[in-house]
Every structure is written in structure tokens, then in C-alpha cells.
Image 1 (cartoon, rainbow, N blue to C red):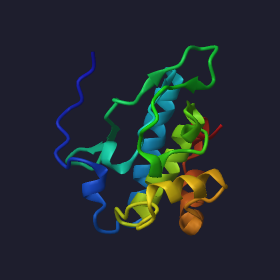
Image 2 (cartoon, helix red, strand yellow; image 1 turned 45 degrees about the horizontal axis):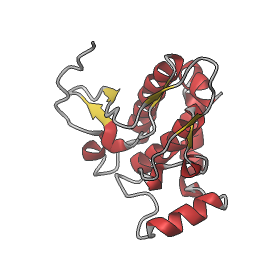
Image 3 (cartoon, one colour; image 1 turned 135 degrees about the vertical axis):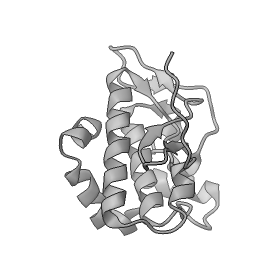
Image 4 (cartoon, rainbow, N blue to C red; image 1 turned 90 degrees about the horizontal axis):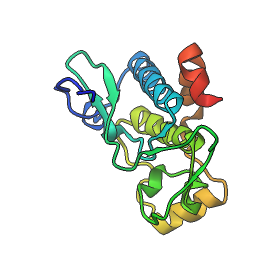
Length: 166
């Protein structure tokens, strides 16, 4: 059993209520990518990655938390199935809306988490009803407004982000 130390700054969501500096966003994104890469290396799919589930300590070091939706995939299994028909829809990948999940669906949620960081904690798909979000995502729409900064953050991740994105 592993106990996470006290995370005095609470969640990333509360830390990014106001816009953070670009370097801080990149540093945080790299920490999240490294944590998710570790989880995926252990065969764990988180399925609920979001700013609210990233815990932050007094030095602004981040830890992935809240494993209520997490699933362990066998080594032969690249994609899992779930009977759950509910979840954090605004963070869900298209395949997750079809009740399939994998490391790739976590990468989608990582992108939405980056969106939250860049937008200062703004709700993704702000003011858009959940059924419409589902429809848009299933038809290929993404949160593309922040692509240049997000792409830079991913590219800057180097060896830490590469396993998460492969």
C-alpha cells in the first residue's frame, strides 16, 4: 500500500483558478504525463483524469489521485469494456462514450486537463449541455482552441510524455 503525503494545495483545479504562467503549466503537464505514464506502465487505466483529480503539495508537485473509475488491464488487453453508462462526459474520449477505455482514452482526458490548466480552471465545453458535448465529440470535435500551447507542452515533455502519447 502506498500513502500519498499531505497535499496542502488540494487539487490542481483550485490551484489554477487563476491563469498560471506558461512555464508552470508545462512543468505541471510534464508531472501529470509522467504519473500517467507510470500508471499505464503498470497496466492501470485511470478513466477520470481531470484537474480536480490532480493533487498538489506545498511545492506545487503533482500526484494523480482519485482512482474510483480506474481499471487494471491485463497485459494482453489493449482496450477494456465497462458496463458503466455514466462518467465525466466532458473529459471522455469518443471510444469511452461507447463504453471502451484504454490508455488512449486517458490521453484524451489529459488533453482536456491541459485545456483546464490553460483556461484557468474553466469548465471544458462551457455552457454546452452534456448530450450536445457527446454528439460533438462523437462527430470529431475537440477542444482545439488551445492547440498551439497544448502541442508545445506535449512536445516539451520529451521522454516523460513520449510513452503516454505512443
